[in-house]
Image (tube, one colour):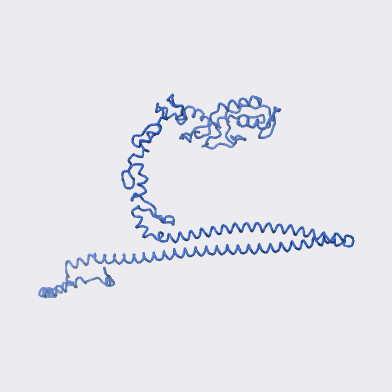
Length: 455
């Protein structure tokens, strides 16, 4: 077909097209040879020219309207610039099928549709099967639109306003069920931490004050990663070293911020001065070139001094002006260089001050850590001492000796044992008390080092 017929066909097709297939979200990958050279998307209603280059129908129509002259029947191909008069819509079916098989998401993804379908079925999916497309309300008196899913479930108008008797609010019929079951502020809910029953409207305020909610330490911005119950936060903060060092950190951060702000201003001023110095140097280079040319002209004028006295006078005047400009430029240059050096010195002082503050902060943190480690070592030593005393008191051999008394170590000395026992029986209560005290003092040889230990 010729260009006029092709343009008329594309205009009617654009009017009938409901979905822009180029703006879809492509899920599957596709070959680059399936992309239109104009829009760089997979072909939509492809057509080809006499040079066998393929384009989208609407893309080629826009290119023809843009680049074709009014009195010409030819159009240059957008790819190879070959003049053409005819446009053919007879594209191989394989090419159309490959483009239609590309997987895309439903264009109503923003409304909630999660379907992934071939691109060739998008038009029919949106017109017939998608549950999120907008259809007229079943109530003839309502001129609003609603989802097709809601039309199938509910036959009444979903845009009417209903009155909630519990919270005394007006809710749209479409959202009334969700409001009644989940969103109504008068509904009673249970706190997940303390199991307290409160209304939904008071739930947020209750969570802000609930003692069972786990909240981070106030020193979490200083790398404290502890999360405890709100009721236990004061106890934790009393023993947390980062909370004690919080004011010091705040002061150091404020000072560092001020120093960084000052350094930023100084850097900006330094850049401005460097730009001015560069401009002055370029001006000096240009002036030096002009001076060299002027000196050459002056020497030639002085060479013809006898013949042109007026030119000699003008050359001398130019030399004096060049000397004066050179002196002024050198003075300005030295002043700017000295100012640049002073600014550099100030920047160095600020960097040294920041390094000093960093070293002091690190030293303070290290000292605090050493003190904490010493306290922990002392606590561990006390715990070990108590453990040793408890083990000694719970020694089964000692209790066994106290319950059974002292047994003879040798059976051959039975007479002696009998005498000792008879003497013990005839002795007074003072001797029994002494022996019982001796039994209590009996210890093992390994317990000799524990005599100074006290409970």
